[in-house]
Amino acid sequence: MKKLYIQDLRNKIGQAVELTAWVHRKRTHGSLLFLVLRDSTGIVQASIKKDQCGEEPFNNASAVTLESVVTVKGVVVEDRRAPAGIEVRVSNFNSLSPSQEFPLQEDTGLEVLLDYRHLHLRSIRLTNIMKARHYLLEYLREFFNDDRFWEVYPPILTVAGCEGGSTLFGLDYYGDTVYLSQSAQLYLEVLILSLEKVYAFTPSFRAEKSRTPKHVTEYWHLEQEAAYYDNEDNMKFQENMVSYVCQRMADQQGALVKELGRDPGYLKNVSPPFYRLTYDKALEKLADAGIEKEWGDDLGTEDEYALTEGLDKPLFVWRWPRTAKPFYMKLDPQNDEYVLNDDLLAPEGHSELIGGSQRIHDYDELVQRMEEQDMDPAAYEWYIDLRKYGSVPHSGFGLGTERLLKWMLNLEHIRDVIPFPRTPRRYYP
Ligand code: NSS
Image (cartoon, rainbow, N blue to C red; front, side, top):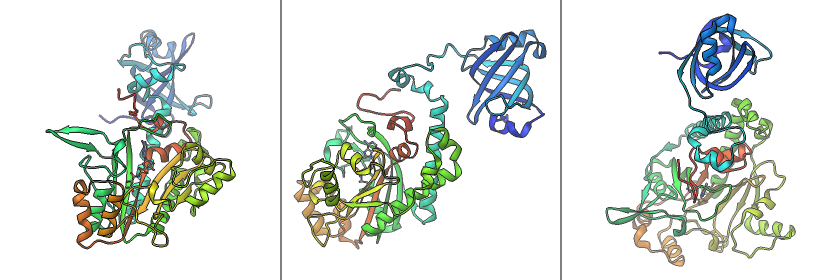
């Protein structure tokens, strides 16, 4: 059975068609009925006149409930008054699968929408966001593949974290404890010693305590790792990658982006080089804005907002104090109080998109850094081992794909870009 899609009706003007779709809206004017029909490709108006399709089909169509699946037969005509400029003049109507009264309306509140996420995902807005998400990943993969990176498949059940123990989800594994992956980084560091340039797109899990518009407990992490890349190569790759996907999205999906409320011109303007501030300069800038931080403090939402206010593209805050960052980051040979790393912050308070760094490839330096952070090297023996057998300088980063899309589409909350958001209080449906 080959289905006709709404987007293809434009090529069928003047022809008789049979269309199966969901009833999205319904309006009556006496003996004239308008149905707005929806499928995965869009919406179209169907007009049904009693004197054209007969009494019984007309009565059935009049009684149809929203979200029912129907089949209409009719001719496609141009009509400037119709939402998409065309309409189907119906000569026959059939209800295939009736819907009970749909529990969601225009004014349904947020918590109810989340309880009924399985139904809310049919909304045009969420459908469009899911499509934008698909395109974003397509463009990201394009960027990696064009540069001859290998896509690899690291495990989700892991023995140890790399971003600190406090956000690990542990689970019982035949009497042992294993953890849901926070990051594939340590495994990617294994794979670069054979494949040299790799990326992975996997779920990452964070037992976040804070409830904010930028945190979920399960997110999709795009991670890159490359042999012989130093921190500068790494930052250049990040800005080229983010610029590439912004421009591809503007060029290829301008209408979708616009419908979701972002001017495609804004994305088109995102190009390298991005703004840069060292951590120390960022603290100075914050002090000028009246925000006093201690050297070594992490940056909070307010700080990120102050640093990126009014910017038209992202900002790197780079070269952080070693005390503020994880054990695997390479110390700056110029001054080992700092590490060779970057956080990439999105403008307009959309928060950190990427965390990246050059990695320690020297055995002794790594063990010393782990001891300094009171870590147990036993759990990381395999990772440390890599430094014994032909270790090379390398760098990598992790990108939160939901955060990138949230910024690109200028959406308010990260849950808007993920079909089934997991937060500290929500894991249903
Ligand atoms: O903790 S990160 O900053 N860095 C890492 O996990 C590295 N080990 C990645 C690597 O170098 N391979 O997380 C990376 C990004 C961060 O910048 C955010 O964009 C995103 O992952 N991230 C999140 N997104 C959504 N929700 C939560 N809770 C979250 N935590 C991090």
